[in-house]
Length: 252
Image 1 (tube, rainbow, N blue to C red):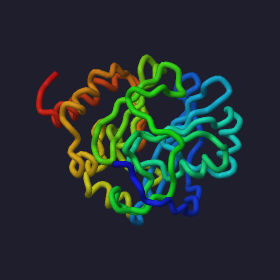
Image 2 (cartoon, helix red, strand yellow):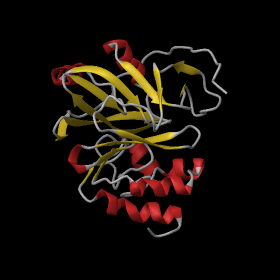
Image 3 (cartoon, rainbow, N blue to C red):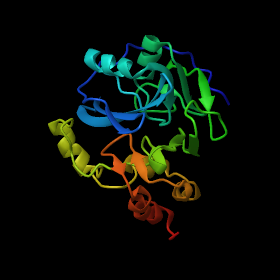
């Protein structure tokens, strides 16, 4: 059934420490920023894809004024794509600033707090998308893992096939400069800091369907630009294969 809860807007989260936009493939840029979760400041990545004179943002990170000027120099923000059910806290900021269209995966909701079922709705997307939807990136496709809330992976043709992920795949082998001391301790103890794997609480808490996870291996990709952690450029399919097959429980 559709969500019938009213929308209660909230103040935009502030810009937090971040780096510079860097071009990883022609017209594909990534910036590493940060977010505070339960007192822990951790890193996160925003991907920017340029289409003509327009930009598409995935896994938004609010940038400071200097960062926004650098973003504006790349083009006008026309679209935001929300792929992760637990991501998107800065989508409303870019909607307000840029007047862009925001699309989220069907079944996702912008909720406050730690409960996807009970938290207040603070924002609504303009459009809902699924695996059959047209996307504002030429040659792109969406692969949806039907957890609650759903989690999607965006595949773009850049670099011979690149996956943009939120929590489904990550490569976080070590704490980086954006971690505060609480995160350095807490994230290690919680088992987050591992190479070429899936987000532990997402796997453990939402238990994605094994067949759907196995389907990631059929997407044909060489690179992964994750929502968290370091970029994986080259050989990504084989690097992630062991973790996916260990979860799926069968070799492919």
